[in-house]
Image 1 (cartoon, helix red, strand yellow):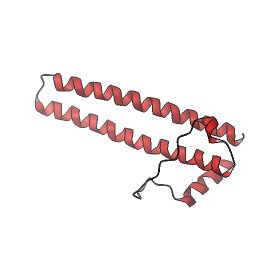
Image 2 (image 1 turned 30 degrees about the vertical axis):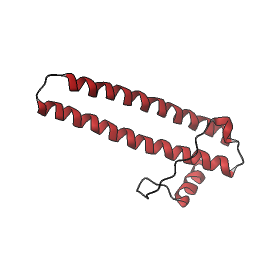
Image 3 (image 1 turned 135 degrees about the vertical axis):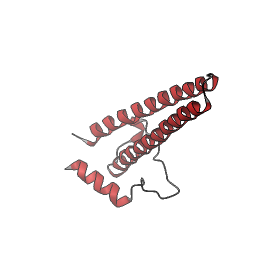
Image 4 (image 1 turned 90 degrees about the horizontal axis):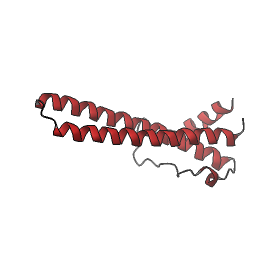
Length: 117
């Protein structure tokens, strides 16, 4: 499989991930609005609100994984002179603060090497 084929498949995953995340967000927002209109005890509303908050946390985590895939795709394109405009790629997200989910340059390079094996 060539880099271009792999990039194409990863771009499909990125796009599907973005679409699914948006749909989940929209549905969750609708549920939250309906929840505010319901006449149920406060402790039950709070429990449901906490579940919705957990969903948003999972969406944020999923978005971090999507950003990692984008970084890999951009890295492969940049290092193999592949025209990114063909794939309609967004530039890789840049993290200001280091966190446990940030890939170092060495980790990114090792990930690319493992894909080639």
